[in-house]
Each structure stands twice: as structure tokens, then as C-alpha cells.
Length: 112
Image (cartoon, rainbow, N blue to C red; front, side, top):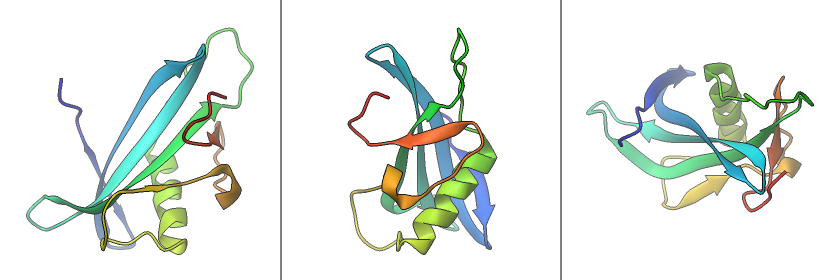
């Protein structure tokens, strides 16, 4: 099934992003991925990716990525040098300092 990419404009620049989740060792891991968009609606350059887990301690983890979370990740990544040039994946790490209200950053290979 093809995932629907959402559009987001940050500082006048268009991006496509998707937020999904999966379980790793019993923990719900939310992933935000984003790309630069061209006027022809094509994705260009390296993908931005960040893995997140919920901060709550409830019985059921229903954490999800919201547009405000994608915007915060994009703004931080741009300040760290993520640009449309290049290839591969630009991963945000816990040490990069992304602060979100309901989610915290985990390393790409971490479970929680």
C-alpha cells in the first residue's frame, strides 16, 4: 500500500512528509520522514528521518507524528545543514536537541 505524503511549507519552501509507526521489542516507534519538493511535485535530495517514542507512561501507547512535529524536525535539520544537495538519509539523533511536547528522539537503531 502506498503511503500518502503530506505537504508542509516551512520558510517558503515546500516539503513532503510522512509519519508512520511500527513496534520494536514491544515499543511503539514513530518515524517521521521528509523530503524537499520541487515545483513539479517531485522529491529531491536526501531524506530526513527521525525515530521517536512517546513520553507518556499510559497503558496504551497511541503516539503519532503531527504536522507540528514534522515542522520542528525540518527546522532543526535545516539549521544542522540538511539541504537538497546530496543523497541518502539525514538522521536526527537524540544529541541534536529536538524537543517535542509528546515525543522524544531515539537513535535510528534503538528500541526505546
